[in-house]
Length: 200
Ligand SMILES: C[S@@+](CC[C@H](N)C(=O)[O-])C[C@H]1O[C@@H](n2cnc3c(N)ncnc32)[C@H](O)[C@@H]1O
Image (cartoon, rainbow, N blue to C red; front, top):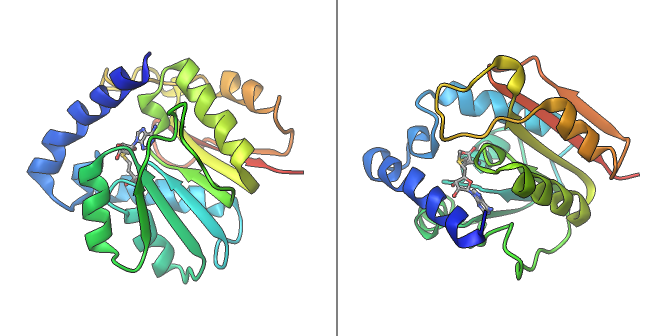
């Protein structure tokens, strides 16, 4: 899929949600906050983030930063999202933090290295080739670990056909070409799995 087509698809998905739900979790596709939070709990178990530099890809409204702050985060957070409206709202919600409009998958994107690179709720928008591009880039730009979640084929079809579902074994097979220091979680919330990829 071409990058501008991808961006158009993302905007078409979220613009009506943003208009209807403002700063609520439903605006980023979680009608129930618990679904979003369950994924954060899992993703943030990747390591000790307390004083780390963290890149949050597809940060949406910056809800992950709320969660990190509640958990005592004192590190260096950067949130990026390809949608201007999301970033504008995230900046209003957290005026003390850094949010940038950026498409992590764009060919000309310039990403600074961060200790931890996280992506929650992003990969389900990617087809296989974009998913692999995202995973490779996350791993290349992290210095400690990358962690992401995706929708799993092991739950069968997702009720929303707009989402891509990923075969966990295919994803792990791809990840292990980069590192065999991997953790895989498939036990927490329905439809989801998480992978942590550690640098040597
Ligand atoms: C399901 S929302 C999740 C938002 C946030 N991570 C959360 O947990 O609340 C997915 C977000 O990823 C963003 N996104 C998707 N692909 C992206 C990309 N290639 N680069 C930056 N942001 C992206 C979308 O614009 C959207 O805001």
